[in-house]
Image (cartoon, rainbow, N blue to C red):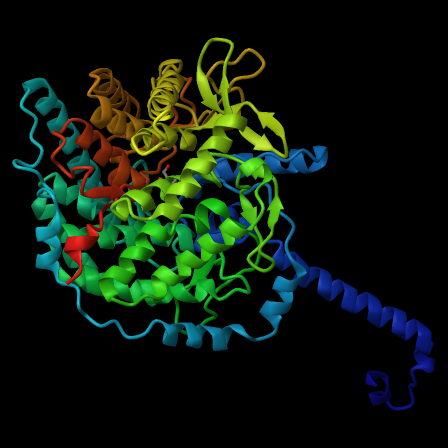
Length: 614
Ligand code: DMJ
């Protein structure tokens, strides 16, 4: 048709016959399909997206990305991914969480191009029926078995422990003051270049370090700083921001942080904000299976969800605690229904050897590949099973059953002993073991510990012992380095015993998991070694991670002349320092019979059902 527009020139005059035109058109449409298809190979997680976004895309919102540990990890992982792609041998690293992209469903593309989502977004917003404000804060407070802050804010009797706790408080104040000074309102602080970092994980949301710090500041009695944070939430936290954010990260940091702040302080501003945010997350669940997509756009102008792809176990499996509390606070069942639906699907689907693989298609509801790990991609799914049971005041029998059956499968398939006698949790790839453990997997010491008591009678002691053994192994990964900080992943093969064997796995980005396990094990056993190990970590952090402008991760834990990554992660404020502070406090500060910590260490109250509801 186009050719006819040129007077005197016919199609045949251009030298193309009908069959050639057809072939040409076929080629063109194939090319367009290929380009569009490539879009859908983008992973469905903001964590994954970081890896694949080009520098030019990431740069406008990323300050000084060259020194960023995440950026380093991204590069290393991207390179590793290329090598793996060549050797066709899949493997996953942690923070980067998705170098192994599973194949993406074609149906997801159909769904995206069908234009269904805008209607679904509106439907979901309507679904979040107007909250009926029936939650009574005073009544809730009376139902707690103890005061959240204990009799004297958990002040320890013994002078050395008190001194250590004061030191941790000083660290928090130092980290906060520097964030305030150089990066206020941004997501994280870059302590070397002394500026702010926004990143891509939270879309247009800002102030991640502020939200993550609220409860830590409050429990540490840093009340002036807490007030600054609260005022920022009240006046500056904008929830209508455009941009793709990770549902998981927004949930654990923003929803978790705001929920905790509300339950601890009773300030209505946190409740209002968190319910508003919760409603904005609902469109992510509009998939054929109800398994949420990993990425969502909170902006009202745009699609409810963003890219398509597989959903990650540790992402869609780490919503339960927060969503149950959103329903409690709003008296709106929709949040609970969404997470119960995830659970229903997980219960129905067949599990290889009783294990839960890390990738699931939100379109078909099938596993996409058989990689199982208690490190990145899988970790907090297991944590949320036992914590759902505990948070329900031990009434959620289904969560209990799922947790202990998963644990049986983990014991049978993943728990290993090294030649040197260290117990570790290997990763499983379709039946083949990868003898490595990620720093992220070190949370499992604490998880096994808090779950021990409710195990089968003959298993209780075994689980507590296993918790101690895993925590010991993770401590070994620290003591075997020059800095006394642990690497991102450590291995038990080719003669290695709890040490990193790859350059790309030697970094430490201020992660909390090892200290988290010390804290739980201290509470459960009161063995003084856990406080000693925590103190070793404080000394190492002070020596190697503290710089003039805050705290920074390091690139190689085995090098005594450290190289800093220029990033003070928000989880350092919400988790690492909070767990250290709790480790040196009496047990009545946030007592475990009243509180469970979400995976970002934000305390959420146990729902003492008989007394809580009016
Ligand atoms: C935190 O954001 C959370 O603990 C999450 O579950 C995984 N890792 C980081 C800290 O390492």
